[in-house]
Image 1 (spheres, rainbow, N blue to C red):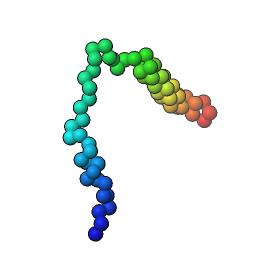
Image 2 (cartoon, rainbow, N blue to C red; image 1 turned 45 degrees about the vertical axis):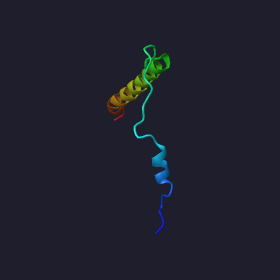
Image 3 (tube, one colour; image 1 turned 45 degrees about the horizontal axis):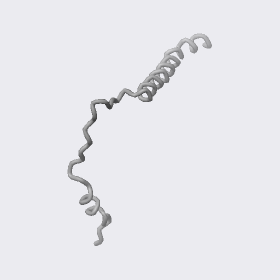
Image 4 (tube, rainbow, N blue to C red; image 1 turned 180 degrees about the vertical axis):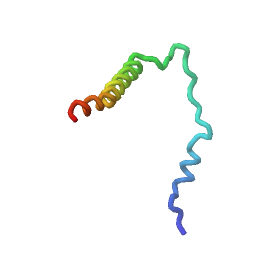
Length: 64
């Protein structure tokens, strides 16, 4: 019977046993302008979506 994944052992050997990330410099931060704007945009998108969903009952009452 042939091995269905012949390269599996080669891949396992080429990967390091424990990946090590380089240490963060003291000047690096996760709160860049782009990251903060992405979070703010996501908040407003969810804010508008949830507001419209909550207001659906008002529309339903008006049109019924």
